[in-house]
Amino acid sequence: MKRQPKGAKERTQTIQVWTYEQALAAAPYISSIVRSLREHALEALTHYHRAKRIANRPGRPDRQTIITQQEAEKEARRADERFRDALDELQEMDIYTLEPIQGQALIPFVHNDQLAWFIFDLFDAQPFRFWRFQSDPEDTRRPITSMQKGASEASQIV
Image 1 (spheres, rainbow, N blue to C red):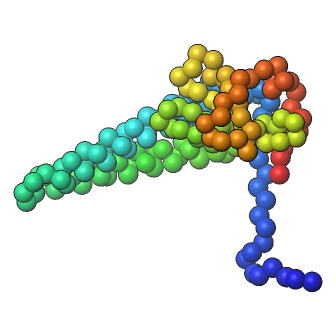
Image 2 (image 1 turned 45 degrees about the vertical axis):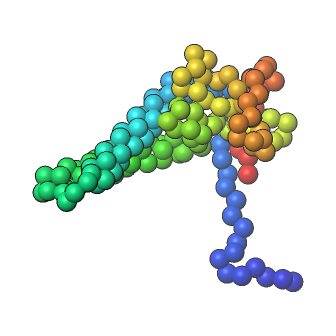
Image 3 (image 1 turned 120 degrees about the vertical axis):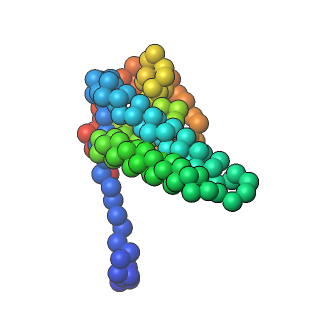
């Protein structure tokens, strides 16, 4: 019998899968978190770009310039921390971001005994319009039909 080396244990992660009705009911809360993710990501980018512009100015920086650059970097780190907090809140519900700045997230469900994802879009009037299988390319968008709106086939997938 062949043994696996220490630390090479196979890890399985169990995620909660959602029904269409559960996702729809949670849409306002998901929307709030995804909006926060987007705002924090944009804020962090703004501060990082500001710090970079200051650092790239020609000539030797004076005291005030150095302080301004450090404050911009500090604000960027704070925004990053708020982004990570919102991301953790989303992931606790087994929801994952696809494109945080574009306001997109993935909500897991089971379709034909396969892991699939509802694609949440913050800026769409109908936030759950598309879905894709886990094995599909990331840019795949399948329209949600009555098949995906039906009862969940399982409550968890391993």
